[in-house]
Length: 414
Ligand code: SAJ
Image 1: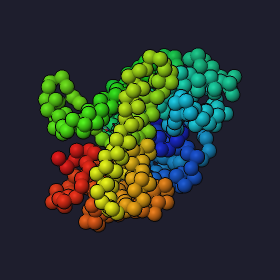
Image 2: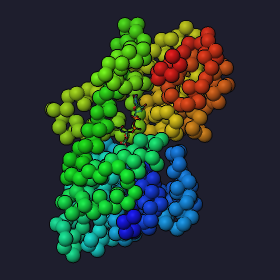
Image 3: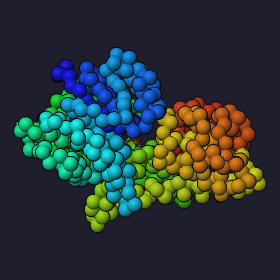
Image 4: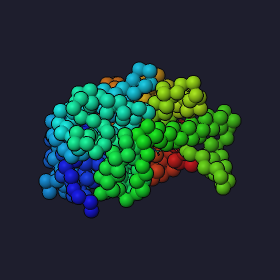
């Protein structure tokens, strides 16, 4: 292993915490910073405040060894990795407030020689803007390399898949975009201490764009599948069979339709490209619109098929944004469940979500929506809506669905 460093990871969420844990497990002294006091306390007790396979054992181990500690204040460190949210603002451009807050807190700690890596998904130019922001607070420092007062800035977007983070954080290739060549080399040396994938060096803007392009590629391809499912509904064709057959062609690989696209990445990142080049991003924008419209199509189908019952019991299976995780952010199924409850006030909606202990507030507040176990929800249901392909749902015996109206948005029970 290369020499160990003091590394500060700013933002201990789905990306920051695994990154902090893996750095600590590879010999670095890691200080995690988060604004949430409860989060900090949990991590210092070796616990992980969200579901991600294999993460908790690593966190518990490095905390017990004293290699990772969390705190609310910004320390001095040799390297900083910023992994804070970059949501979109009103005009679908980035809201940089968390990046600015991190930069604001890091700036007074700098002495010259530090490496600062932005991992948060960024529109083209945000990493350079972060550098300008730091220099505006610290005019005594420079981004020109190899001087006593140089700081080194790079963008290294994360590409891990929730549910497989601990595998992919080590195995995936990484793009490292430096603001200057020296910064990229230093960032590469740090990632090389735990990353077994290829470390690909470029400039910060290209790295920013590469990340957005990867997620847009997936969004466009899912939009194609979702559009096919709507066309197929109209033409009376089984879309799953259709895609399976078409995918036998050696150069065709269509993705799977679903109730819409969720999560905080694929449903967000393409908008940064659209905001940066609105006239030119026609396909990317349309794909977003197609995917955003899919939940409405699902709602219409549910309402139409449930119309024959007076006071139906609806079992809604899954409100996470995808299979086998507990993340409800930007989840289309969560929105669909809310709308069913609203549009059918006389229906009783039984939500089954094995990965959560309580409904999110907006569903909790609805009188006709309740969290249920799978068995009781299925027993009572007139209408069963499959919204997430969780492993638990895959195992449901088909006999239990007989004589019920079934709307399977993931093609799980074909
Ligand atoms: N989905 C479909 N059909 C499919 C595949 C996915 O409807 O065939 C839906 C899912 O149900 C979910 C959404 O798309 O609602 C996104 O899920 P995902 O598994 O495609 O991706 P994320 O959001 O969990 O993670 C993505 C990954 N990006 C790519 O695969 C290009 C991951 O590698 C990134 O690190 C992550 O975004 C990120 O943080 O940017």
